[in-house]
Image (tube, rainbow, N blue to C red):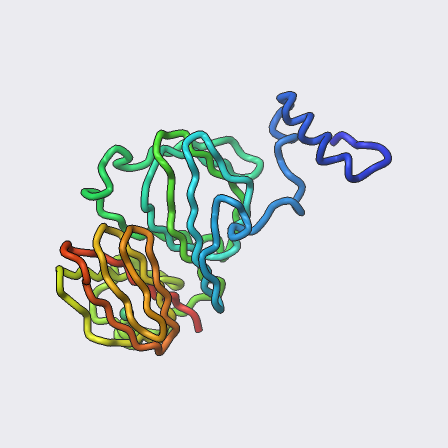
Length: 246
Ligand SMILES: [Zn+2]
């Protein structure tokens, strides 16, 4: 390591200058105190936080990249728009990944939930870069708890089969035709709703939530009765995410 004599405050400037001069990987690795948790990284905008639940909206423009950030908790992701990205784990090389069906129009590409739970046992520090031509946008639900395996889908208040299920999340798809509405119901878990297609709907519970573009969302606390109504003239799909906490 290089040292800047005299003043600690000079070190960041010196680091930037050295990194800019093209010195290798070691100079690019920030000290631990500069690595922020994912919800503090500027490309991951926090939309909501309550109890163990955080909702983040990750958006990275073409040519742009996130700072190194740390994942300490399991996440559920919905890729609202995709682009070619590459990622770098701290201390490792960049790895490129092709976005699946990156060229397909969002209207014909079904948005499916994915989840990474390994962060619970093994926190990860990495950064992302958008090397494609579209905006990379992920809707992210974070579960900052140990999860819960004790409750069945029925006990949690769901009647349909989840598209994704693990100890921290279960994700269910709700599809409503124009004029269609769900019955009022409640769950024994907090839920996050995310709109994944075009269309218009209203979600009514303790609070009222409007859905009118992909990425619109709602949150209902455990035990809070709610219902959804399609208020538009097209079919709409929402993903309901059960956040599993004890
Ligand atoms: Zn519900």
